[in-house]
Length: 493
Image (tube, rainbow, N blue to C red; front, side, top):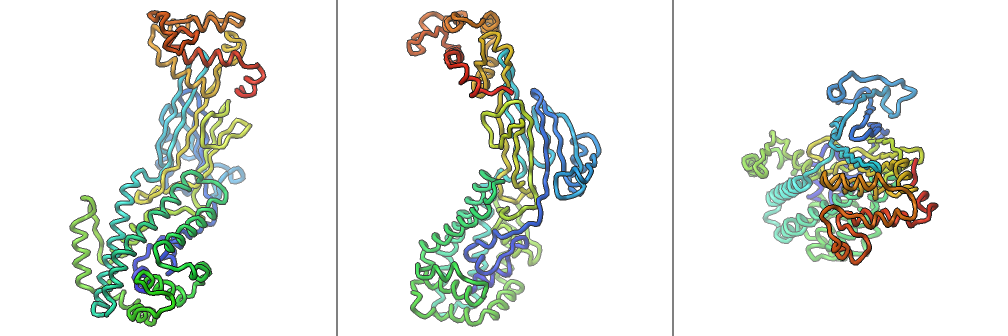
């Protein structure tokens, strides 16, 4: 089929595909890896700072940059202790405050807030990936349009005088151009979203591929390329070129209103019966057609959104194909993985990592590419946790009253108090002690300048301070809980 022939001449080098894939775009996902090459990061937070160790394969291309970031040469790890598959491994160690280093491609931060009740921390880091998806998709759409501009010019060159030329050209230009673009972005959305949410989940490859296949089939059925009666033939299609070509020309005919029971239009019949000649025609067209050369020169002069988009001789075919599929599908690709271990005293109250009882938070997932043109979202890691000062809280309240997210909220609230109000609150806390009057002292507290009318601003409660209302309310609620419930819901390690 003409679409397949042209595609064979401009398919991306990095993506293995056959004729079926060129039409329904599923084969572009089939990339295979042979092993998992880990980039290991070990993090031990210490207030606003962290001790960080990164371990990579000894052949990792970024070793000079890592040496500069960490300030020392790579330390070789004995092979029997190495964690990845690229032996031997090497490691780098350093201490960083607030901002994470750009060691394997990325950026992040560690925020820390302290108070008399304890502290809270917020870690977030992203690795590699693409932040400008809108730009990637815009360039991808331009490449799709250029592909179809080439296709239509070739079709005109070969079949302008054919009786069914106008009808087929209408399908290619108005229907197939739009539908394949929509299907491509549709699939990209599924893969990007699935890999971003569950980048390391076992079985995600098969799940996404199956989901994409079913959605793509349904999309093409809805758009009128196939009939329901053809589904079993499509899903069971072999790699036989004749069968695949027949399915594809039938799809174009279907969009022209030709049923499966009717003969193919004459031009589609000629293409189907002379596929080798058609392939030769495409080769000659790309190498010698003067109008195509003028078209490419115009693209070079115009660029994309002001950015130079220059092709070298006949390399424009590979460039367009690469830009048509900028999404670096990582399905079945086990070659480059990220593993981060963070050691914490307490379980995070919010994270997308996996918590282990040994006090380790772990992320293990495929690592996004460092290539600037890829369309994958960055690997995004985050965690929020709190470390209560147990001795202090038990001395003042008889139990732990601020832990987890409540302690994080408290630290933020206390940090934002003015110096005057902060001193007033600290004076109250330092004089508290367990007993029957504890809750009432908290409720009776008010900052200098607050009058008794503030209690009515709090919905008629008996808490006098508006500014401290939320904090006092949380503490008194914890004081009213049975002690056993507090200990199980707010574990202290």
